[in-house]
Image (cartoon, rainbow, N blue to C red; front, side, top):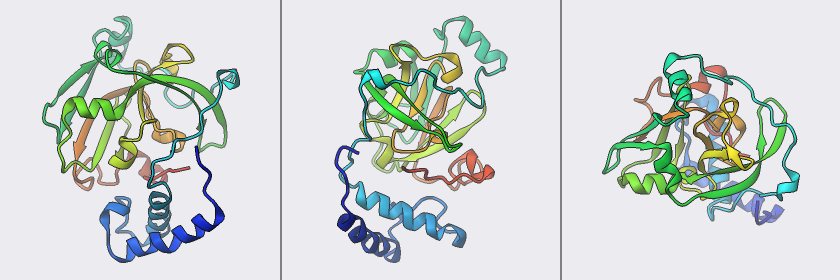
Length: 246
């Protein structure tokens, strides 16, 4: 983080986070808070939100610290005919659909995203499988895309869907963070297919599985219990927490 949190601040944050839960503040709870099993996750989530309430940045590195090898795991080349057609067109035909609680539902081409103000950041990817790697990412802040679409005041979550069938979601706290990107570049070049071309999500304060590859659609909503299976993410069925903050 750009500013270290002292032990005193950490200890002070625990009761403050607890008070948020006891007062029933839904804005400070993950979508799975209704489960007794997830009480500990709710406490962790609320404490993190309190400690990071000023939205500090994740650590950024010098370019000479970029990892020589950045593993590509899970899907590395979606086998669907639709994706292969997009790839053959150098993603000229690719479109990111934006729908739900926005004033202007529509779509963005890759060129549309590249025409918006870009951000480049060198950050560390922390995988839930136990490895980490540093890379440079270039893309448009998600906040700018949401601004272009006209996010409505009642929107609380952004749900992401991918070409290879995965989906996940962020609350607006993470969605509007300046380092949350729709990334189309990696290490000074176009985003490689194995790393999610043409566009992937970068959420630098969460574990790797929240950084979805092969984005195809975004939906803004005020609730998650009526989206897909209601858990907030496809990873929940594999035992992953909706919130993966680090």
